[in-house]
Image (cartoon, rainbow, N blue to C red):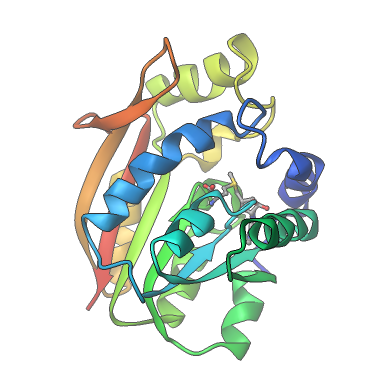
Length: 230
Ligand SMILES: C[S@@+](CC[C@H](N)C(=O)[O-])C[C@H]1O[C@@H](n2cnc3c(N)ncnc32)[C@H](O)[C@@H]1O
């Protein structure tokens, strides 16, 4: 199974903090409007069947659901899924949350997704190629895949690892392993080999004064990718 138990233990530890806008997931809260803008500009969200793999506490899943998507949120952390379920209930949203690895999920579910989201997950799994292979298995022709992650170079090491975790402490220490950071060209190659056509790679930059995000042509640290299954 393509799950790193140490990662899951770590996410379990902070599961109760998912909806705390000033907590360890503050940056993800701030990034969510930009993610929605990114997805919205590339696919019709209303009535779409969307699978959010590694959905966390449901920050994105809830926004997609509010926009009319039928959302399935999948996460391997039990505590995280229970937080997501509780929050959706309180928000009056109908989201199908499942606690599972993607490998197990695909055994019981059909290829019925118009969109698959894989935000900030690929840098947390043991086998990145295998994750994309499994995503391929649940994709049908024209399924849109959206990914976001962290590039691997000296800039991302300094800003996304050292400064974010140890100097500014805006994310918990040990959240990221540098060797799991992945270059857009590496994902692009794997996706092309699997029959996906990459349509876009867009960088994301952070305003250091208010920690708000915007799109950037620079993909050296955080970036989004979108691709379609051919
Ligand atoms: C950094 S969080 C990102 C959450 C969400 N995608 C977002 O960006 O708002 C990573 C999430 O992936 C989950 N996760 C880690 N490894 C996983 C795996 N192998 N399969 C499913 N979920 C996993 C964690 O429990 C955590 O909730």
